[in-house]
Image 1 (cartoon, one colour):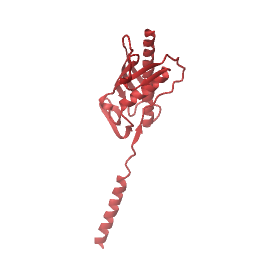
Image 2 (cartoon, helix red, strand yellow):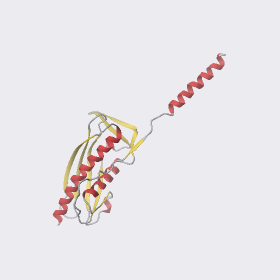
Image 3 (tube, one colour):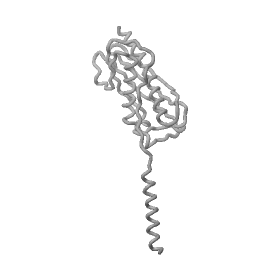
Image 4 (cartoon, helix red, strand yellow):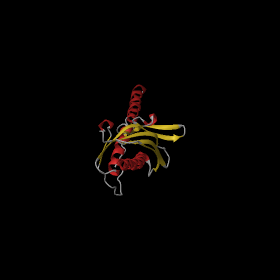
Length: 198
């Protein structure tokens, strides 16, 4: 009798093992998004703005979302990923935010499309901090607005944006709002350059 019981037991163990292997977490994909501007913004004469280049720290320049645990440790989540490269998302979100901040502008994320009358915006993200159990994300960006004539206007924006809830959805939303604050600073500099040009 024991000769028949062993295979049956082994079959049960293998079945349980197989079920356990098929219950891995579902991968979720996230995107940064523009933030709707509430206050009306005066329009400008139609101008072309090209964003680029955009750089991000090597640590976060990967498909997985990287969260900060403490000063010396991070968490790389294989099941929480950016839908496309982070530097592409940063450029696209800033472009859409700037379009709202400077009505009448045509904003592109392709710097090669800048003509002689266009404005260029370079973006160097120095810090893209996502605390795993924190209250706020931190975004530090060095940016430069290059008018077609005259000197560039350089700036640095450091934004701490509250995380309004648990999970990656709230984390990504906080980063989107932080980028909108950076776009506001860039828009102010661009309008200043427009004033100097006129």
